[in-house]
Length: 224
Figure 1 (cartoon, rainbow, N blue to C red):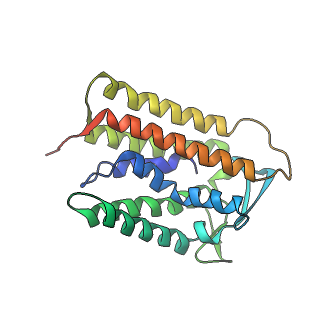
Figure 2: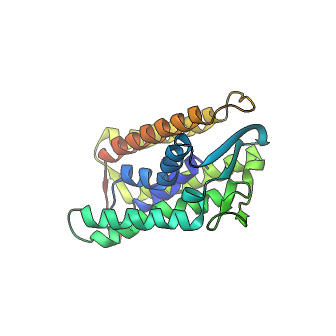
């Protein structure tokens, strides 16, 4: 899953106490940030196989440190503790729990689309509902999740001015365009996974920067 992960970030921004949107965007992709780094280091393994799944050529056959349920939970706890320690202001540990929940959401979102390649700890059994077998249904799921989270973000924030009204919609279009672009082009059998890992790191960083800019133009609003 790609942009569908950001649904949890948008939704979590509506929680109290508020956590910055850019940080939530990093949190929901933290597992993949680390995965890309471990792929570049040769620790976790992936094969690129054209047609492996209709919506993904990635055979993610070894990634226990990032995409096992236990591994994802460890990263979530670490993020929660770190944020709780360094966050300024009140409700530090509640905010840490929100951030940790955003990190852990990654595994459950991936569960929807991945082939059975998500272990509980390491090795078999592995889980995945396989929506990536269908390009159409996997994209409907991702877009639906994203729009749902985006709606919650708009509902719980208000614009500071003109840019606050426009920027969220521009950002939504950008995310959808990046999602569409990620499915364009042909891949070669046996191609190195390292360029993919590098492009993923760049994309996640640019998207988090976009979230930061959008959030600058919005402010939390109270609901009865």
